[in-house]
Image 1 (cartoon, rainbow, N blue to C red):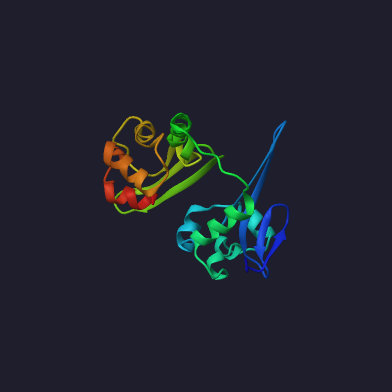
Image 2: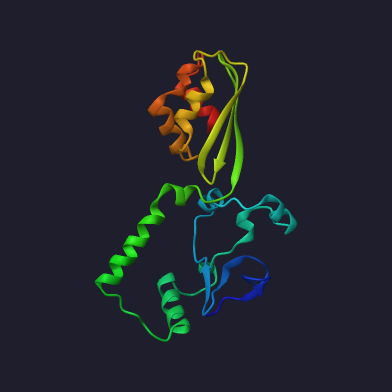
Length: 213
């Protein structure tokens, strides 16, 4: 189609000179194989860097400084838009069509619902630990140790030299945060719902929000 591409490694298509534009995967079943790939036509690099968190050691071993430098955009090399790209791919890769009836669509929509569950969307990747916090005027030092399962908070513990206004502040923070999404919106919603900051002397909503964001 005009883009100067080459095969790289086991499953990548890159532009000559560097920049991944397509990754592929292969799945073998008893009587059939599934092969699929994703092509990167266009994206907002800033949002992409915020969404993708590859293993740092993997990037270092490849000599890559950032996610953005690892990928390229097809729109910079093709003389047509993404709709035309889809049309050409359909022509190249398919030889027939399958028409779904109402029962087929209903069955697909029922399967689809399971993929909207927060546990699937946010909790499917590996366990990780994140520490947030620092020193706040009038409060002291407050460190929040988040345990994550995917993007969901599975546990939280506290450390520091703050003054407690509750017999078990960790339990109060667990009640507020466990099960919530570890995102800016998710953390702010957890604070607004149960106000765990109220069990630590002089800690305000704004200060806690700043410590964990």
